[in-house]
Amino acid sequence: MPFTANRQFKAHPRLLTQADGMYFKTADGRRVLDGTAGLWCVNLGHSREAISLAVARQIRELDFAPTFQMGHPLPFELAARLIKHAPDGLNHVFFTNSGSEAVDTALKIALAYHQLRGEGARTRLIGRERAYHGVGFGGISVGGMVNNRRLFGPLLTGVDHLRHTLDLEHNAYSRGLPAWGAHLAEDLERLIALHGASTVAAVIVEPVQGSAGVIPPPQGYLQRLREICDRYGVLLIFDEVITGFGRLGAPFGAQYFGVRPDLITSAKGLTNGSIPMGAVYVSNTIHDVFMHGPENVIELFHGYTYSGHPVACAAALAALDIYEQENLLTRASTLAKYWEDAAHALKGLPHVIDIRAIGLVAAVEFAPVPDNPGKRAYEIFTRCFERGVLVRQAGEAIALSPPLIVNPQQIDTLFGTLAEIIHDLP
Ligand code: PXG
Ligand code: PLP
Image 1: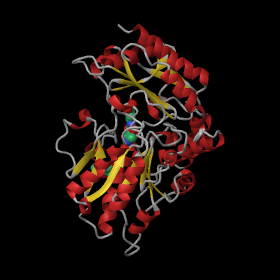
Image 2: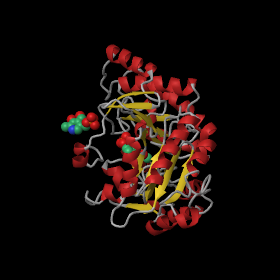
Image 3: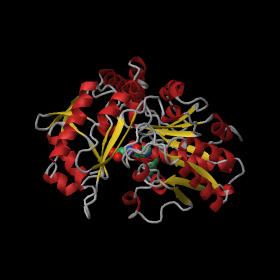
Image 4: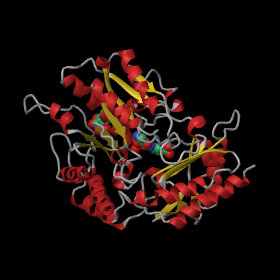
């Protein structure tokens, strides 16, 4: 099983058999409130009929069309619709089947871009400590979660990492973006000085680190990264696999923070989790660099059998209809204050050492149990599930990221149940 304690799970399985709206149903017939949008992906709520109808229609009409030197209309239609919600200037899209593939694709485009411009020495990639960029070799190389890297060899060479920005001494219980820490962006300048600007291709960051336990950037931090990238000709990649599709209250984190990256990776909410799909958004400048040379030659030697799969496109188009009709790309902004207050109401409960909330995502962090990493958070996760609320363990924290259709009463249930369970912990 993926990222699962297999033997423990088989002894005590947690199986979900149905889902509708904000709720799952378990194999033993219990209703469970979805506090995690599945795995941060079911932003529109579960089992949206328009998506299942579109998928059924599409698989009957065109199940598959070859993707290399052939095509079908749907990826073009989808790309044209998607870029309307993307930051200005990011007008080209490359489809993948997951966030991990989107990350590998973005890193490869960044490297090729510099080669094609005659700056082939720019091969270094810079990630960040605590980052999650999926599980491909590219993603774990720039990623910064130790367990996801340490058993898998030397990984990509020429990769370096910025320091992460979580510092409880300065920033615990911040509301809004942490006031302290913008200077940590200067780490980028230090790494560029160390390696030489002419060797650095790209920096990749999650605008808000997700998997590592919801770490919003300090005020001004992302702006500083952008300025430094501009100064040294380094590409800036935002990995928006979680922050994309309305999670923060804007279509992308890029718009929420007012910082325009050169590439954006996305997945998850793109199809509402219904069919696997990812997408890389690319700036016009980058795209145009590839469109030179003889027209019969492939411009980008990269792609997946299932890039722009017809059924995935149909699911994404139907999902996009719902995002637009129900204003779900921005709804989180109307609930963010209520959400933040509900999260911060847990301050003072036993073992709680920090609370972080932004848009419709939050984390409650617990003091670690010596020699037993993640023990408390895992215990809380299982107890919540038994009590009919799905939350997610992220290291020493519990993360919440409900479907964007969540209502205030359900927000109260999520944090209320969590508070009771924390209170009763041994
Ligand atoms: N980038 C980011 C920022 C992600 O959050 C990926 C890439 C990889 O996407 P795929 O589709 O290959 O899984 C992710 C995925 C969790 C959790 O609860 C987070 C993810 C996936 C599963 C669980 O921490 N993020
Ligand atoms: N391995 C082999 C032997 C293949 O032929 C292919 C694709 O043709 C792949 C891997 C890659 O598979 P995908 O395009 O689904 O990523």
